Image (cartoon, rainbow, N blue to C red):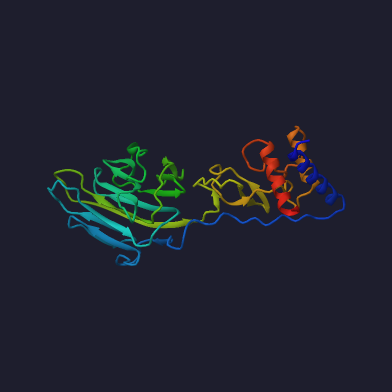
Length: 338
C-alpha cells in the first residue's frame, strides 16, 4: 500500500474516532495575508470648500505662468495664452503618498472649451515617468500606461471615443491592486462607474501620488482652464477582496463577505461588495470543527450527491470539487493532529 494512502487512512480513522466520541476538533488558527500597504499610504478627501487651496493636501505647479483658484466649492486650474511649442501644464499634486493597493476619485466639473486638455494620473515619486492615468483630449477620454516599469509590455495611449462636452461633469477613478491597474469613468447618469481600461503588468513598487490639471498641446495655444471637485484617495488593505476592484485572494485563501449574518463566498469582481480573504480549511459546514462529517460532505458532493445549501465543498473556489479541495481538508487535519 502506498505511504500516502496509509497516512490518509490513519487521519480519517482518527477523525472518525474523534467524531464518534463527540470530541470537538477546533480549527487551527491561520493568519490572514499580511497587508502590503505600509503607513506611507495616506487616505484623505478634499471637497475644496475652503477659501484657499489646502497646502497640506496639495502642491501647485505650473511651467507656463498658470494659476489655481478655489471658489464655489471647487478648484479651477488655468493656463494663459502661449505660442511656445514646449508643452505647458498647470496642475495640483497630492502631498499625501500612495503605496500598495489604492483607489483615487475626482470629479471633472467643466472646462472652458471642448479641446481643453485635462488629466488625472498616478505618478511614482522615485521616477515620474512611471504611471497611468486618464486624459480628456479634444473632447474624448484617453488612457495611458507609461514608463520603463511596464515596458516592454506598455500598450501606450488609447482613445476610447467617450465624448465629453465642455460643460459636462463626470467622475474618474484610478485603482491599483497588486500589478493590476484599472481606470473607470462615471458620466453621472445613474449608471455608476464603467471600466475604461485595465492593465495587468504594472510592476513598479515605489510610492507615488495623484496629480491633475490642464495642459497645452500645440504650437499656438489659447488660454484654457478646467474645474475639479470632490477628490478622495483610499488605501486598500491586502486582505480585502471582491468589490469593484476585483481583488483576487492569494493561494490558500478565498474571498468571503457576510450577508444576513451568514458567511458567503463571492467571486472577486462579481459583486460590488468587498469581502475579506479568509484562509481555506477543511471545515465544509462552517461549524468551527473539522471532523468526519466534513469528509462525508466532501465525498457526497464529489460523487454527485446532494448536501445542505450552506456546504462549501469547493474549498478553493475554482469551480469544481476535486482532490485539491481534499488536500486543503487534510492539511487542516494535519495541522491539528500532528
